[in-house]
Image (cartoon, rainbow, N blue to C red):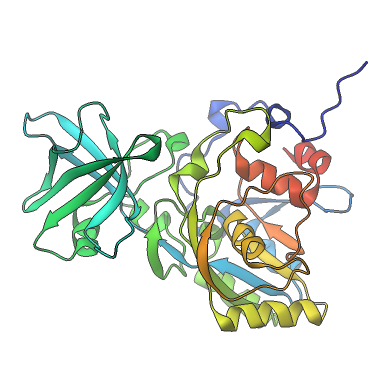
Length: 331
């Protein structure tokens, strides 16, 4: 009996990724990246450039972007002993105190409740409690507003696969040009390739653009260890959809216009907020939605997405939209 890969197992999403194929720095211009056009219904793949994206859009399309803003949430400091330590802020802890956060810490065994880390002059982080998954609940101790202290002393939390420290250029380039709502521990990377000029060209075509917000967590970088997708516990992410955005999406669907999602975070947001018929409900919440074959997506018609790692939930989401064989053939 032959073994057929159909996307039902996590091991079906393995592929060879030479280290040298990972771009560790952005292109000189945002829209200078390469673009692979993959017809969802079959047909030849086409190599292109991201700057040529407007040629793939048409008047009446509805482009949906994620306007979350990445916080420089990686805090580097020292313990009272002088040893180095790292705090990665994930999200404000429930309770309404904007100085108390859920975080990951390093070294985990040394930073137990009761310990503290000096990040900068007048800025300490106290470890208050342990959290699920090896995390911590921490308090930011500073005379500044918490977000102001993070902006002043933090560094950008680059994905681990870039294998480099954050640099000055990352303050701008690891952020979309339309980022507005601070809260992400990682960028919605598909949107990084849009420049203001490119968005202007898209608008001139008669393409409507609306925004949602989903705060990206670091769980997006973690490979799936289980081979059965049903055994994987998805990380939780907060999202928000305004009434105007929901109305625009539902109107476009009713009129037969295409919904074009910029990134997997937009897909997760829309699918989390859609009812069985695909009507998107306004409002906010948190989602642990894990999209993978044979799940059928209900809202979008086209997807602009970045390159994804083997065994990642993001690659499986793409396969749920484009089909397993089509997706892996593209990779």
